Image 1 (tube, one colour):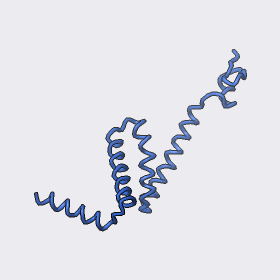
Image 2: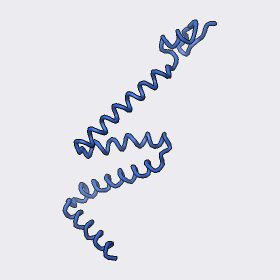
Image 3: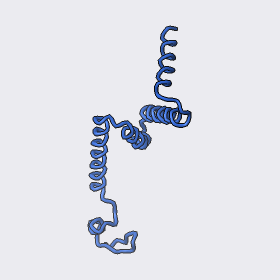
Image 4: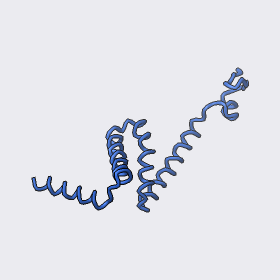
Length: 117
């Protein structure tokens, strides 16, 4: 039986349509997804070993989509808090002009105050 595909082409079977690239090849898509996740994992590993902070934050941003699609709500909340905290710290340092040592002194004072109470 002949089949009409989306492009208006006729094929004798589903195999011929897949060979022409008109239909979805699930095995190929799965193989590509595994390959991309492997490359992403290598990038994660490289960023962590190099202690590359901006690259690690970029990886967290990329993973937010994966966490959402995979219904990993706890990881999603943790990642959101991390990214929000980093963005807030960058805002304080760049816009307000507060340097690292002032922030460190405030945090140390805050922690010591709560530790003693």
